[in-house]
Image (cartoon, rainbow, N blue to C red; front, top):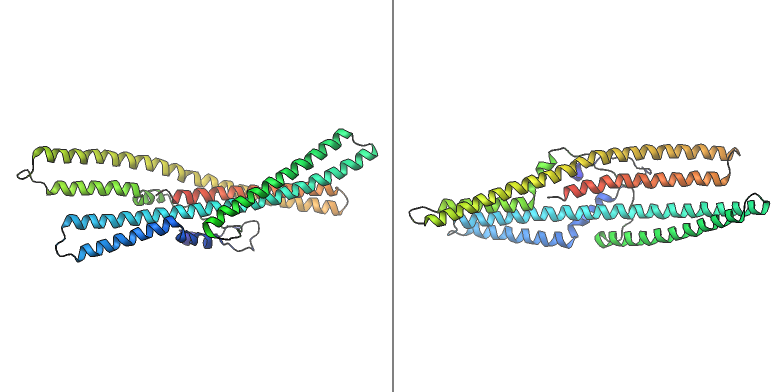
Length: 320
């Protein structure tokens, strides 16, 4: 899927895009390593089976099925690991932006407090106004401390998956084709296991002959086949509905990211205009800093909108 990536500019387009490199670390996740070892073991078992001159069609079928299932579980483990990394990466990046926003909010609150103190001395504000400004500073400090704790936790979660890593703005993958739902169903490990069980039962039924097997044994096997066919159909329908619902969420999320990008662009223009007005003496330093805070808020909203799509995208790929 990485070959499908296209560049959608973030707010700092000059920065590198290291998420694809972080995703490569999925190969080193323990669950993926274990799944790969299992697949390699099943491949060796199949090779030994095929070399056995006394092998039966049944033993060969079972060996081929075991390898196919192990490979499907490896794909699932890898996709889940990539989804976990993408989510942790996005969370770490957002946590860093939360800290920047909290720092700016504290700076604005402290500046507003100084302004309140000046107004109180000049008789332009009451002691209640001053108290409220002091409380806003205290609240801003608490928010900054909480944001820093959140950033530390998010960085630790990411490091646990990929090692030390400084997250940077990412490129969004394009909206996948609708055929992805059918592809994920085809590769779904649980469905594959049921299909294989059904294939095995049908194979075993083909080995039975009424001349040599009791009718009750044949009917019991046929009943198992019918039951499994129903279970397979029910599971496939349920999974298709769930996967389609998750797929249908992607387009609105991508549109939301584009809308947030427009909002961020507008916030940048408003801040630039406010900066020109400040230089012209038309607004106060506090007014300029408040507009800068709004810009930081739009930046965080953009990251959250983009990451919502990113996590939904990789979460869908992991549903196999």
